[in-house]
Image (cartoon, rainbow, N blue to C red; front, side):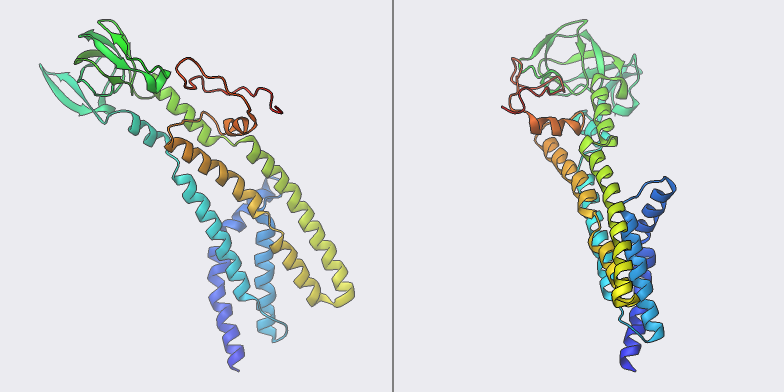
Length: 319
């Protein structure tokens, strides 16, 4: 009596896990089927549904064994894997965070006969601003009055300060290393030279690296093989050991053979690599560059000792 009561309680407690908790896997499997693709969530969804269904039938009929604990643990571990992947992606700076880290939040603008501190986001083309020594330029502009130098290494890799005078062009994110300058704003936000670089970084966030696309293709074939083997195993064990044993084999194959590592590890590894590169001061134009760097054996640098072009050409990959 107590055993039956405990199993019934396990059934009730497992319902939220296999319904609401496993909902992302059901959605992924259904979306893949609608698109004609065998998504890696398909064997997961089948395994969870089959395991819970068999356990519920065994509980209600009083025959067989229930595996509610195993099904709930499977859902928990899979969700934890996706949580770790999401946290890793969140550590990579977004376009807005990257822009805010490279451009000052305020600027000094000439308004109504006096200099006023304003937010950088309010600057417009044609505004007149003053940039103090040691301050970063908030936008692209042209020097109106004053002379000095600017550190352009952030954009060009050139370590020597570049001289500035009336008529010289300056770029957002670079540093005024000389005297105070008055500028006329020529471009703001995404129209600046730095803004275009940040946009390229954003495109890298949205695109899928070649190795990720290859992993997705492999996962599709893998899922097809797993489902096929599960069906063959089910038929074989049904004929030799009965339906109960056959069902256990099918569920075990669907769950154990899930290509989660293939689908999660690849994008997570690329995300972590890009995050570490960003913390080290490297901004990657695309995740495909990581694959090229892995094959490179020789890298030619320019006279400043920094890579500024944003492209890597593999030379003698076997050497």
